[in-house]
Image (cartoon, rainbow, N blue to C red; front, side):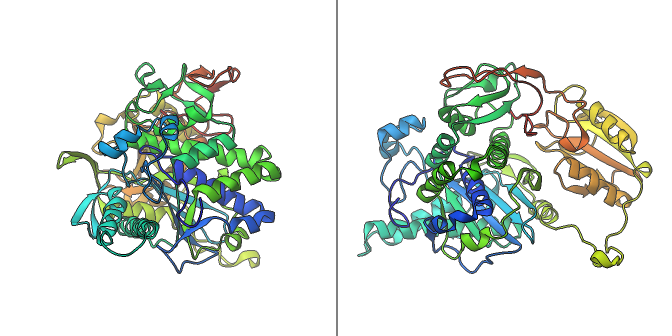
Length: 518
């Protein structure tokens, strides 16, 4: 890429993992490889956002586009489009294939001191009212804000003397600003910095890592093992190696997944888990050759806001390690069709409460080593709380396993039933509900599932309800490995992966602790 918007900078229509994976890798490199600080200055920048803090607590938005053009509006080469399974030049030019929508939106909160981070994946189909009308449209899917503002900017400069590349740079920055404003309105959180990347960047990263490793749970007889649209093709479920082309196809697939885009967010999170583990445990951060390769990817495919001083940020960036970086997906209220478009119905107060709870650090002791009493109220004994577990996952026996694990931690075992027996709507992610008197215990239980607890007037006193989500296939790591419903599988390489990657037997997780996904 030459200049802030030169070269070939693209994003695929369904490159959902692009933004988070590359940005996570870049930030990890920034946090641990201080000797490459000079090279961090080569990452491209945008004037769409300014004024954010350089260290300490902050919110970072990661986003990636679906465009089949570079940032200057040039259609990608036939070879690159074919390699990405992303259509043809004819399709882009004459049939409208691709666009400028943000198929990836993840809001990451870095806690003060850089010791912890949490990311909220925002489903691209969430239907919102935009902060203002973009290109004459006041509402739509949240991923449309970028493309509408981009088109509006290009239209405004169509007959001006502004140069071609400058017009597209302004349009890109208008799109970035619109996406940022839309996420701020939805979540109620101020965004301090952003990073934008693309599908070609993910492909380059996968090549730099020599492929990725994931664990895939079969769905309906393995229907999610083959997808003509993305090109994803594996032979078996379980833990396995994916070559760069198959890694790209893995994060593109959505059509054959039980929850579509929501399951694709879980694939995206699984890839991040692997990247974080790889960076921390496979010597990447101590290998100058691999570090330089990653930074070359960053300099070609990552854009951040111009005010973000990455070398300064690097001095305290310790949060993005596996044990300190957790993920959630913003809750949806259901599905709807608006103007012929399939969209997610959302309840904004619920989403904002979820994000606020996730981004709020626990109250620490005010006395430190001097022994002053903590400001937090004590959590009542587990034995005072009865936990009811309802299975919305479809994984036989999982609710019973979760209930047994909670009993082993001191809670009283309550109802263990199918989700149809309770009043709350099943969501892809696990939900935890509580009676007012059990708030503290519910928050602790919710932590096992990476969820936010919500109050419910339908629960009797002393009860907490765990509603396992449709995407849950295994026991959460914090509760142990018993009760997992995901099958043990023997992994082999598949599709165009070439020689077998070896045989690895797993039970619902990868060797580095990440759960299996559809």
